[in-house]
Image (cartoon, rainbow, N blue to C red; front, side, top):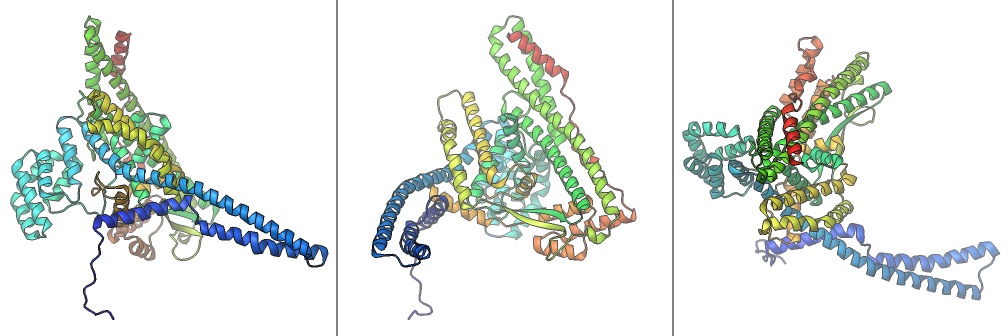
Length: 635
């Protein structure tokens, strides 16, 4: 009999052993989903089919065909036939199991290799991001990476603050706040904030102009907050679009190293079991109304893609210029507005064109030793002009798609004007007709995980070898080595996109919006010295820590329904969005009031033009003149 307060026997498993066991179970489960069928089940199926089923079928067929039971000779024939057939089936099954077992082992090794390699390549990619920058930009990027770590020590917080503010006294204050945060002394945190806010706020304001995201992270530490595993890490906007554009146009310059990092994180998330929710709406009922809604939704999707494409091209251009030495752009800091990115890019290309002109003039006057430098600058200028041209074309497309949106919106208003409100109201409860919200999940089942791992395993060897030279300090010339690492990392991102596309349809706009609206899991706990099983267990645990937050997608959906489709949010619809998805009541009330003012004519309709990104001007003629002169001199 067990005593009620008897101490239970402590487990002999260490945390590391438990991680190993859970990770092995996860890898084994993924492998068995596609490669192995229990041999006992197959054996029983053969014995049952070749034994009783065959005999009963033979006896029944003979009785129906001849009208009498089989003779002894017939029984001997049937039994011999059954034994021979069953034995042949068993032998074939055993041979298949032997071959299938080896295939399952190979699949398990591929899964282990991918699970082990992706976190390592994630760290290598982050190092490439810092390696490609220069000067203060390198310090700011490294500090931001430190501040994103949830378990960063006070010494690490102080180091990051020194790198960003270049002020040891201010950094020491932020480190002290971090110490108090770890033991929950909010009173002392408020004291220090009150004493030093006037000192640090001007420093934060100055830093925000250079690195907005890093400033936000440092301000969080000053306010006694730290990244939360449950909230995850914000994703870089439109990273999937840039990777797909690089595939479509066969131009890896359209993607950045930050996009590579995001793709690796997404792949490891999905392999670890991440389930990303997706909300859409659809209408079933009158065909004219359904057609008008479908047309407007497609037009809005194309318009959003055009807007995202323009900003993505500017980011790619800025990132390229930041990766090149000798340009005016030190880093492509995240969080900057499109107009600032465009202004910086134009200034950098102007300076690059001027440098190219001076070098071309020097070479033309006999300084042939500067030819290699001129060739390098001309290549940089050509790539910069090409990337700027793609950004310009993208913003031209925004205007065309905007006109189509206005036409589709006008058609929707004309169709709905003659209908009662109940025809276009958001429907809740059972039923299929009407305007309804649909819930979907973006995830990989075990078979899809195995397929993705097998696809990636074919390319990891080449990628790991090239980026490994950089990590291990190869003797190859640094610039060429860095270029090799960047190219290999971008090819990996492309292969990840190609591997995921058949299973989750990354190219669909609604899938991209759903992924961008969620935060990524924080894999900061993963270390290089962990085994594949430990990484698999930790990855699954970190993915489970992420809170499922549907408030932002629900509010975006409500905004689209009210602003673009003129759908009324009645009290039942608002209660549904609040209770099921966590939407904020104040936001929904604001949307309802907006629609009420529109219907009374008190509010001026907001044009889509007010939401357009800044216009990008055509490439300067001076850039082309400098490039043409350089090409002529180099002939």
